[in-house]
Amino acid sequence: MLTKLRREVPAQQVRTMYADWRMIRDLKRRKMVEQYAIERLRINSLRKNDILPPELREIADKEIASFPLNSCPARIHSRCALTSRSRGLVKRWRLSRIVWRHYADYNKLSGVQRAMW
Image 1: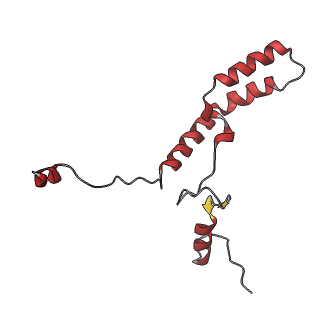
Image 2 (image 1 turned 135 degrees about the horizontal axis):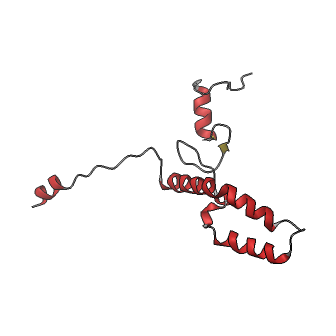
Image 3 (image 1 turned 180 degrees about the vertical axis):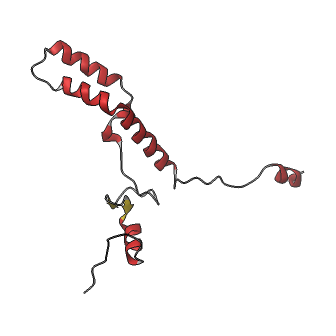
């Protein structure tokens, strides 16, 4: 009976281009931030304008509160594009320091040379 079951259920892992689920979550957040960026900027400028009456600013506060939480740019946490490591990121290349050093050692990064003396 077990041999039948093994043939019917493949035990292969599905591979994607993402290292782990955190990268997928970060990608979803980035898309949502991009989607709501213009509207969020306009409403925030209304909220922070001291010339406008307080009633309008309160309405703008309520509108911002009604946006999805992931539309806030502060919720984006940069990750390494290859390993999904969140700490020690070299922002220009979106790589962690470990991966960046490895690629720099083997001359895989354009315009980068490790210091030698």
